[in-house]
Length: 128
Image (cartoon, rainbow, N blue to C red; front, side, top):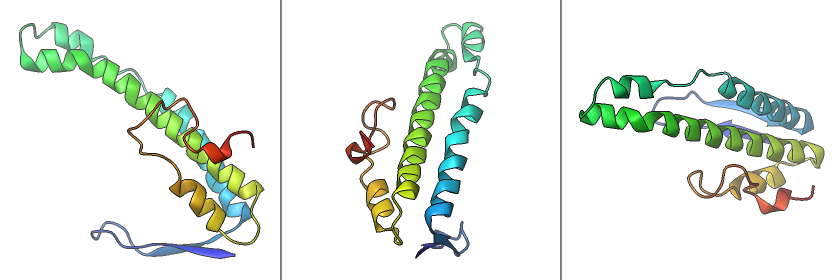
């Protein structure tokens, strides 16, 4: 059974540790898999209407692009949470007494800002 530790980072986090096992990986996968539902329930930004009230303004121009950026951000977050939930569930399903495989799967995920959020980012999870 592996033990993972969250180290203090710039004074923002306290040190915490938890056991990594089949059950904890499955619990984490379930928690992450629920986040896209919450993201999709967030109301649209609605900045375009404000943008139209500020014609010729730099702020109005920027607000005119905000709705699309918000929609993209929600899609990217949804894709990332789905990907990590799938990685953690796969790790739970294949857990063999250590967390090295799970750590390697997570480390193999590409840069958040690269690629299409709708496709699998970690090739080793495809077909499993």
